[in-house]
Length: 351
Ligand code: TXA
Ligand code: MG
Image (cartoon, rainbow, N blue to C red; front, top):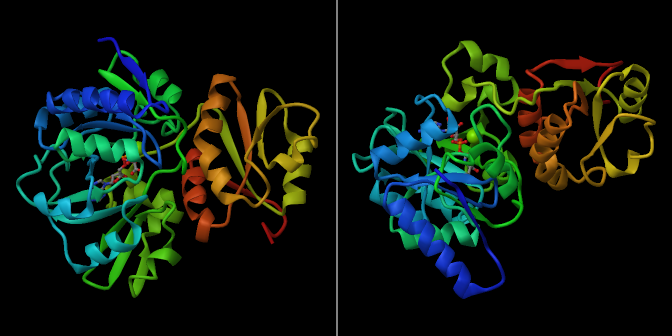
């Protein structure tokens, strides 16, 4: 199969033609990679069992890890799920946007999409191309991240091309993703409590604005837990985002981190550091995370830095351990997975 890449440009009429072409592919049971505000998604109709099967095959993903169903408007969840009052409160505050909510499903969604679960994950993306595509296709859209299973989620069309060329019909190139980490996944527990199954740009503090009790699933901060126990979200049990290089994650003051890397790094190594420290090292590859303290920029860049490290054939990547809370909770969650949960603590850690 040849994979066509079509760009979103400044021309609205041309963009509408691209979107219509993509929508036809989706209605016909084919697959299109689409931009969203979080990461690129591998989109197929959520109403067709064969589309879900093709998605698992193209990703090389185990069929027991369910897909997120994307809608153009939050109330469309009622077409295939049983949303409760908390869903509508969350939707009012955070949708369209980077939030996915787990709901009880109805028979309209084939069980292949949800990997046999009685629940379905629903998300209404804010990216205008994604929303328009869902609207024009007239189908809810199943879309996992558009990477091959095990590699970092794609945050640019080039990343999708590298993983999916020859496996899908089309890639819609909408430029780099704004957020760069996947959506927050929450499960409502009754009408006024919820559990964060995957952290994202919608933080626990933000969720607490509409929900009295916000729990964080233990596997979010402790991924080794997910390997043995029964995971609350199937995605938790897989080792995600694993670059080929070994990630040495250091829990230390910033000064100690820099000093440690300067003394110990050898071979083909890279260092994830803020722009301000670019001049500190004589050798190695500088993987710049943006201005120091800019969690949004560091989140936006993480996956493309990991891909760049692999392309350069790095053996080791040194990175600082982020705080497991607030705006950096999602970054913490992804980076401990990339490091396979190994953390090196120097002195008394960060403080
Ligand atoms: O930002 C995103 O959410 C992106 C874009 C494309 O929308 N999508 C994405 O999909 O990250 P994926 O398939 O890579 O991750 C979906 C996560 C997995 O961890 C999966 O286990 C979990 O959501 N999930 C899906 N359905 C679920 C369900 N019914 N119950 C619990 N967890 C579920
Ligand atoms: Mg994924």
